Length: 299
Image 1 (spheres, one colour):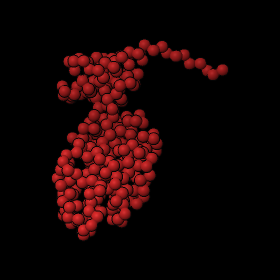
Image 2 (cartoon, one colour):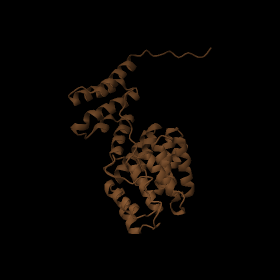
Image 3 (cartoon, one colour):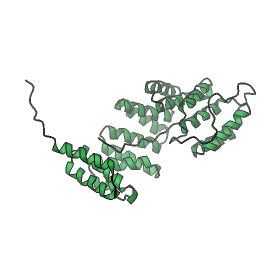
């Protein structure tokens, strides 16, 4: 069945989203092996971290490159190069940077966390879980590692461990909007729609511009049978997609008449051919027309 997907907000290290590479980057292999192994100043580390937090990737890359060119091999710099690699979707390079930083005691936990996140993004899930578990053992307050573990447990449908991981991530992050959204996503997968709604609302209270949480909130409302609220206040540009999502949700609930009405509205709202809504409508018609199979007790 065609589906407008759930959205999980990504929380790597400094990152919430993956961004296309721009300009020269700091990657594994260009750290100098010679020169003075000078520590980077706290002010410089803060400057680079601020650039990463604000998604100023060119600035972050330039600052890292400058310190590398000066011969610095500070492991904190290597962790930040890994963060930059995550943000740019260069997961192999990020993994190498984090591995290099693992050998220094002051950055070992952050490096393990980064390796786990990079491996998860690469689809190497068993390895990701192993590294993330090492990270939370080394530093139990590593909320991004707990958040990433929650996502991995979701993939395995291991709901008890997912619930525990998100609880620790929420406690460690002081209720991060990203983690609240991701726990809500987990609860959507479990069919706990009312709980999911509560998490998405809480996420939006923390971060009103978190698009993933707003999209997921509307979908959760529709899956909970509240179709009107799921599309309320939609702007004309997004109305067709929201009607499609609500129609799909109605179909999941077996409310076929309502699903048809909502999907028909989606087609009308688009004002042009809307392939996804059209395909969903065909599926609903097929399900509605399917004969009910009689149940028999086993002989």
